[in-house]
Amino acid sequence: MRHCPLQKLARIVLHGLIGLLAAAVVHAENSEADIKAAFIYNFAKFVEWPEGTFTDSKDRLLLCTQGDTVLARKLRLLAGREAQGRTIEVRPLTGAEATTGCHILLTPSAGEVPAQGRNPTLTISESTSTARTNSMINLFVDANRVQFSVNLPATQQAGIKVSARLLQLARTVNKGA
Image 1 (cartoon, rainbow, N blue to C red):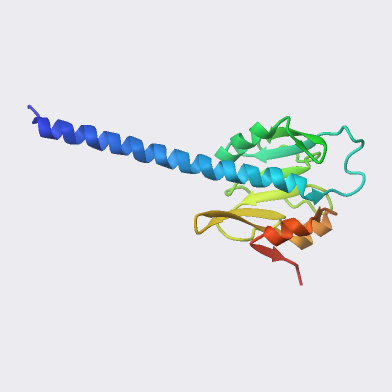
Image 2: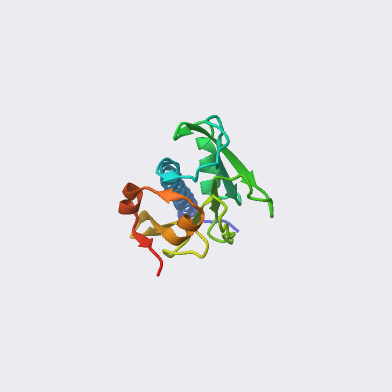
């Protein structure tokens, strides 16, 4: 059975459009991940961990990621950069690996944010809403813009101080009861 040249052309155009749409989706995911990675890098600059969190001035700032997401892969590019005079080390966690020693912990949108209690780990999550249980900072997209919310009771319980400047930039700040 022979296909007419017009059908071949239509198939070629259709495949081309599908390829362009797929590329646009990948580009949008990468752009969003780039912006979120920049936010997280800046969060590291504008929070203060409790005294005694670091044993000396040469201790690295350990950024841990759960899940193999686009954002987790982008965060690996922060390895070796500095925040507050500390070199950032990025550690991908696998499975139920302990978060002990992590100064920043990123959990993906589908992941559960582990309760940190008084553990001085800044927990950052991704979500479609403005709040996640146990998360100190939540990244979300609203009106095509990356936004974040801050859960002050959770940061205070862990002894982590969030700068006033960062709080001013937050879309919402949960101040507790």
